[in-house]
Image 1: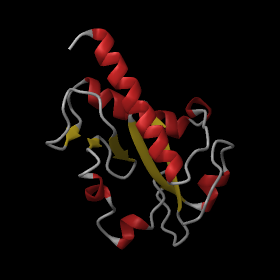
Image 2: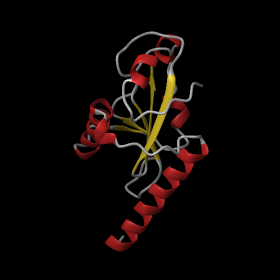
Image 3: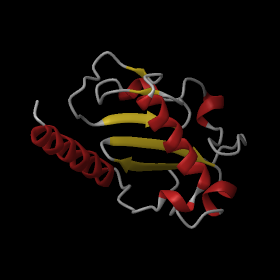
Image 4: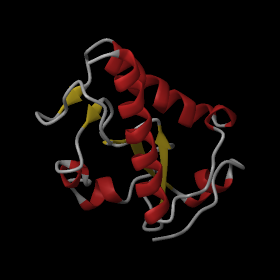
Amino acid sequence: MNATALADQAEAAARDARRKLASIGGDRPADIASDPWLAEQIGALLLALATDTARLCRHVKPSPMVLHATAWTPGRVVCERCAPQLRPATYQQDTTCDRCGEHTSAIYSGALAFGSILFTFGLCGGCIHSSPVYRPALI
């Protein structure tokens, strides 16, 4: 595939990721750099992808596509079809803040589109309100 076609596909995948994010109510622009924790999570994910240490589902191909990753499964990247596999495996995992590790029944869901990657995370009340980046919607 030539560079122009690849760039076009990458932009289309990024648009698709932003569209999907908007459809779930996450269309809230965030400055990742203003939150060190979030920047660290994205940086670690990009490093895993760049060094071929990310755990990919078998459907992820070199062609640009919408991908899913979560804070609670570091380094794991999957396609849309496999995204349900990223759900927290236990109630304990589902009610634990991804940032500070606090166990709480009130977890705020967050998501952002970074290129063609949809990255989701769950934060406790203290963490969600500690940064101006987040505009919480309790689910």
